[in-house]
Image 1: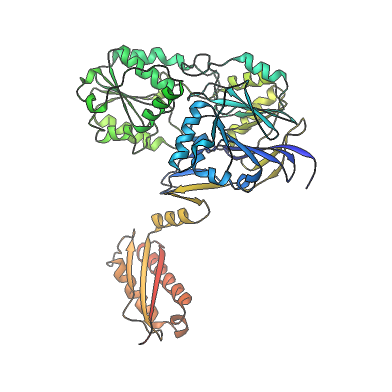
Image 2 (image 1 turned 90 degrees about the horizontal axis):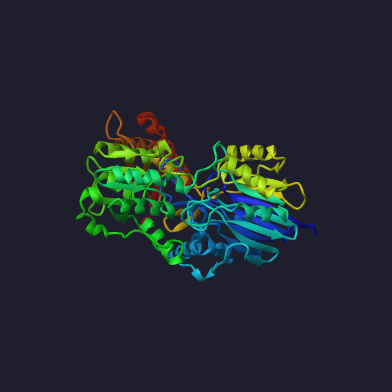
Length: 556
């Protein structure tokens, strides 16, 4: 253990991937550092790689093992990939939580639903106000994003100032929330920034980002010209977009209905925290059916193709009494996140089959990103003039491209994907160590490790099938009757019922087995598994998972 103080950065999630954000900053002697944690987010499963899983989050093992030295948790904003894990992981971390008012309400709701005490969440004022925890003085720097009160963090330490951007864009007219103010960035940069830890999502987008206000005229024109019912879906947390859509519809004589829990929750949270001062009147969905189709506008959850969300149900069989018909218009005022294309395409095709006019974001008219594009990132580099850049919130190719962009401004960059410990103590940042990182799954009500084997077994059963075998033996090892077999997720063989064929082969194998095999549960199980898998491969071309139940009966 060294007595020299070090300032370090470590991503447990969110660097080398998009989503599941979790970052650790440490200061103090190696082995006795004090820490803060920034964000505790989730990503979402898919049936191909994580069947049955409800949520995926970064494994907090590194910081959980040092929870006695964790000063606080700071949440930058209310998106699921930054706050979604807080209710599930807080019991392992046991630290106070700090965030701005809107984010705090969302975090408190998550803690309550997880049975945790929401009072651990502390509401903080924006920069230049700061919070001091241990050796860290942290301020919440307002930034524009696609959710209210998003914030970067100004982290002052005895070894220098760090700026952690969180998710951000440079928007002078965000409609809801604080606008971009370059003077504030310049003032922060004048005091010297040792390292900028920066969003990299849109580093490949070559043009300056557009403002939320830029799409308002296009949305107004759509509402004016559409003839039937209009439905729009977008991210529920994008309150500015929800307001723009609803206001444009209202101004063109349409009644506004909101379907889906997430959107209603976010609108209510906006009013409760004061970030939303007004919103067009909302009609109850039970009354929306009485509104003439040409006079109705519906905001619906499910922009990413989620099967249980309102958009998917509307496209299939209707939702809460509302149905779509030929001549209606369905607007995707959102970008499809990579990985969600299949779910979105399913909805698009269902809508097309019904004669609904579908408008997606291919034209760029109805959606703007919440992340800074390449020229915007370069502007932030110029305003803050950091000694070092550490890109985050991006796949590895994003991190590399962001480091190359920083080099154009003579800023030293470090590619630090999850698990890389970066030493920020001196003027030149460098990776000094690596720690093991991983994922934790919420599976039903339980948290399980990605390597626990639960999901692996589920995938094997899904791809290979499952055979259950029950055998009964006398106390002396003599089989009683034949084996009983049930095959699930397996096709029948060309020669007949697979289970019957396997029962026959197992009876033959057990009849020929030596007594030492029949007397040992372990040896008998190996024989059964080998027989089932060998015969199944021969009969149907599959090697299933096999569960063996051995019952021995003592002589009376």
